[in-house]
Structure formats: C-alpha cells, structure tokens
Amino acid sequence: MPTDNRVKPYRVVKDLRVPINPSTALQHFADPAPYAHPAVVPVVIYQPYLNDAQKSQVHPQAVALDIGFNTAAASREYELFAHLRDRHAAEGFDDTAFWGLVSTKFELKSVSSFADFVAQAGQAHAEGADAYLYNPLIGCAAIYANVWEQAMLGGHPGMEPIFTYLNEKGFGAALPQAANRFFFCNYMCGNRAFWDGYFGFCEMVLGMLDDEARRGTTVGLAYAGQGHYGRDRNALMRPFVIERLLGLYLHSPMAQGLKISTYIPHAGDFEWKFGPRLGRLLHRLYDLKQSFVARPDQQTIAAWQTARQPLVKQPQVIWQMDDPPAWMPAR
Image (cartoon, rainbow, N blue to C red; front, side, top):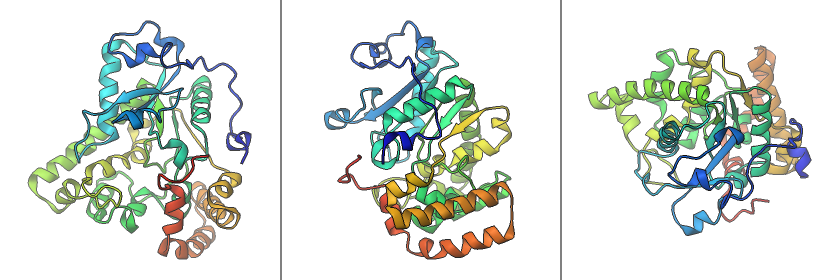
C-alpha cells in the first residue's frame, strides 16, 4: 500500500526539525553529557538494543539506547521510560518536547513506517497535543472489547483476578475501548505533562498491586506470577499489566485537560495488513465497535458481538498478522 495512504489522516509535515544523522546531530542525546538545545527537537524517539545485531536495526531517525541494565523478568519498557524521565530531568530536557521509546519491531508490527510515526507525532506536537499514541495491533482492536479481554482470552491467561480487582476499584477496566484507549504496545510519545500524569497513575496502581503481592492475595499472586507469554516463558505478569494501564490512565482524572492525538487506521490499513477478505471483515468490526463506544446502541453492539465470535474463538491468524514473527518482511 502506498505510504501516502498509510498517513492519510495527517498532513505532511515539511519541517520537523528532527536531526537526520544520529552520529552527529543526535550525539548530544546519545551521550551522558547534557545537550545544548533540546528545544529545537520537538520529537525524540529512542529505540532500545541489547547487542550489536539489534543496534544495527535502530532507525536512522531514532536515538539508540543500550538497555543491558534492564533484563529482569519483571521489567520491560516501563523501567526504561522511568530511566529516560530521570535522565531528562537531570539534563534539562525541554518540557514541551515529545519523547518516547519504540521497539525496533515497529515497522514489523505497524502499517506506518517509522518515518511516518515521527511525522505524525510532529504534526500532533505542532497542533498543540500533549502526546501522540499509536496502536499497531489493529486486528485485536477490532475483535476484543478492550486490552484486558485480549489478555484473558489467550494473550496472558491468569489476568482475570487483576482485571476484576482494577474494575472493582473503579478504574473502568471493563469498559469497551475505542481507538483512543486500546493500547498495549507502548508506542507512544509525549511531553512532560503527559509523562508526569502517566507515571503518577501507574505508580498509584502498581503500589496497590505490590501491596496485594506482599499480602499474598489471589490478585497479588497473579500480578507477581508468570506472564504466560508464548514468546518469553520467563516473563512475569507485571510488565503485561503495566502495558495495559495506558488506556486506564487516559480514562482517569489524572489525564483530564491533556490533549491526546492517536493514530486512527482506515480501510486500506486493514487490507494491507490482513489481505482484502479478512481486512474488510476486520475493518467492519472495527467500525462497529467505534460506533457503539461513541454512541451505545444495542443493535450495533449485537451486530459486533455476533460477527466477532468466530474470530475470537479462532484468533490465531489475526494474532500472527498483527504481531508477525521476525521472518516476516517489514515492508
């Protein structure tokens, strides 16, 4: 599918002021020393690596980040976000600039190129947004009510006690999530106001769950236990809970007043990712879900529930195309 179709919801950004050569213009971000003029770079995206092979996959517009210090089974992107927050605070990073950390698998999972993502984030920044968020798993967004249902129906079995606990505590975990709430890949960037609220919300929720774990409750044992993740049998549940907190944060009072921009996929995105037949079906389900979340209507809900059932029972093709194996060409 042509690139201009993939970024159709956004205008072309002619001057993002994002340095092109990371070995020169971005050197001040990669080095521990404070940099001189953070204000001239409104969007800074890091990409993590553990070895030279992974480092070679870092996009030229990204800042390479060595994450050898963050390999514990209970930690993933959240600890890297916290590391960058602390580093930025020490270096005097511009509070209005966007920053984020995105996997080198971005172009494998997403319908957009990395350059498109940076351009879209720059456009959001120019229009006064506090953050730009991107969900690459558009098939899952079409067939699951929210990211917690995706976990409980196969993504991470054993999440049920945590889901029930968060919902009973009033965090809205059972609410259906449209495109502006359905996130669990951490493809996001934002300014200090966005990140301060995000960390404040996450620390509050994680503090509650940590307390449950210390007391050995059913919720705490699930949170501190195995993540049941097929691609990493050693991973614990905690990071998969954290990656699902973004949508709850956006629904919370802590996000009130923030202007959030999100990527909204269109019909061509679904057909590019899943092929014409499945792509059209998923786009129809996606549109139905967007409609009833915006304006609850029993007929629309019933149509979505009926049409999605076969896919939820046999989601393997959708999961594989949404989050492809490494051998799949990115483009």
